[in-house]
Figure 1 (cartoon, rainbow, N blue to C red):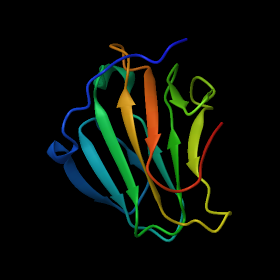
Figure 2: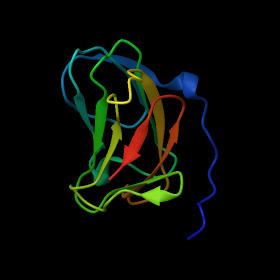
Figure 3: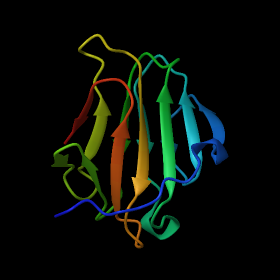
Length: 128
């Protein structure tokens, strides 16, 4: 299946939020993680997302990594793979390699909020 075409809105327009606990994310947000443990960052519910919505996760002060979790029927396309559809699928910043920091931009590619594409900009991410 070919990658969908979309335009990148200006990332500077995203609101910033400092995160120290697990979070149900919202579209249009930049999350700066700040925790010693791993944080669960769950995609917005499909009814609250649409094509071209953006979320950024920045793990600069967080030493435990993060796990992007999905809701029912959602999936994330990452490099040449796709996460398991639904609540069992995840995209994880793997800190066991010694790389503790990383970030990812998530862009919704479907009008129904079910499909997302992940663009990493640092760290060791794994799709499952």
